[in-house]
Structures are given as C-alpha cells and as structure tokens.
Amino acid sequence: MRQRIAKMLLSVMLAVVCVLNMGITVYADAEYDSGMTKEEVIAKYTVDTGNEQADEVFNQYLEVASDILVGDKYATYISTVEIGDPIYRTCYCLYAGGTEAEWDSKTTFEKMLWQELYVNPLAMIAENSYESVLGTLDSFLYVVGESTQSVYSRYDAALAEAYLKIMEWQYNYIIENNAVYNFMTGEDSNGNKPGSGGMSPVLIIVVVIVVALAGGVVLGKKKGNSGKKAA
Image (cartoon, rainbow, N blue to C red; front, side, top):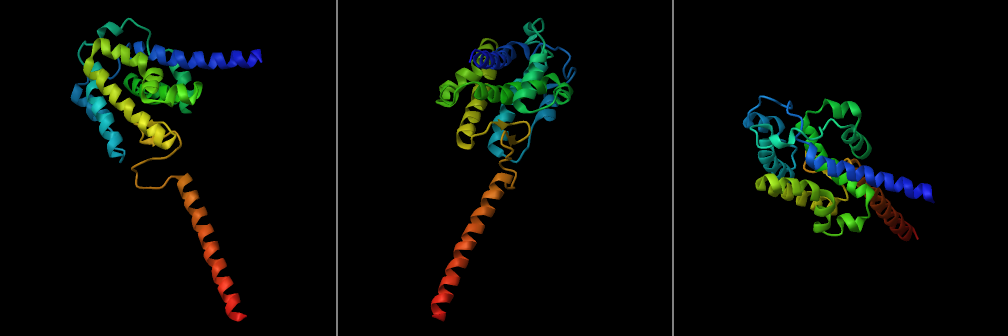
C-alpha cells in the first residue's frame, strides 16, 4: 500500500513539475528560430488542418505568441532554466506518446507549443481526478493553465488572453470528445482528426457493426415473412 501511494505521488509530482516549470522556462533558449521576422514565424507555424474552428483559435494564439521570437519583450527569461531540461522530454514521451528523438528535433518554439497546448492537458488529466480537472471550466483553467496564465498576465495581457481563449476551446473539445486536441497536427489523443473529411477508425467500426446488425434484422424479417407465405 505504501509503495502504491509513493508511486502515485511520484507520478503527480512529475506532472506538476512539467506544468510549473513550463510556465517560466519555455522562452529561455535565445537561439531558437533566430533571425526570423514575425511574419516568417507566423508563416512557418500557421496550421491548416481542415478543422476551421481549431485552426482559427490556434492561429490567433500564434499571432500573439510569435512575439516571443522577435524583439526583446521576453529578455528577462533568458537567465531561467532552459526548455532543454530533460523533464520536458520525459513528459512528452510519457503523456503524448512521443519519442526522445522527436522532441529533440523540434525547435524551442515548437516545444513550447506542444508543452503548453497538448502535453500539459494530457498530464494533468492523467494524474488527477476527472472532477478536479474537468468538473468545470474554471477547474480546468486552474489545474492545467494557472501557472502559464499567471506568467503571461505579468508580462503580456494580449498573450494571456489568447492563451485563455485557446484553452477554453480545448476544454470544450475534451468534454465533447473525451480526448485532448492537438492543434499542431489536427489530431486528438484518441487518434481522431476532426474536419479532415474522413471517418475515424473507431467510428468506421461502429458504423460497420450497426449496418451489420440492421442487415441481420431486415434479413430475419424477410425470412419470417417468407415462412408465413409458405404456410
């Protein structure tokens, strides 16, 4: 029993560290995408996944968040712990199912996007009760985004507002679909890709089963009617 409790506490601590550290470290590496203009940054990271609502809210967030790649607004972060800390790689592999090589291949800005918008929600949902994280929108914003929101609010009101908006969209998506949405890929944590025009594997299976059952019922009725006529 004690070992089980200790293991649970360790998992929670890991998840909390992922979130708390993220809020103050994601901007520390001064070399990421260096020399790019704001327009070049937006052109590079703008998404078009086919999910219009998600793409719109993400690209609005990107418009504001891209400011951290140009100018010196966030120069105060340079002396903090870098996103290269292994804890972020660990969280990415543990909760998002990625690999160390995938994480290491991302630019610092990409790591920020993944950590804030996808890995954090996955980690907090995995390590806390449903009610404490998803019971209400306020609970979600507090558990998942309080640290990031606090940092953003101190340095940039527009960025804080954009982050709040995208996380509200994320919350509504989770409640409706029981999955965390990945704005960067257009695919959620269940492997579904809303807005792609195709059907998810799970939905396809469900449809096949329903059609098969319906076909069986119809066939049974036809046989029953045939029997009655023969009699």
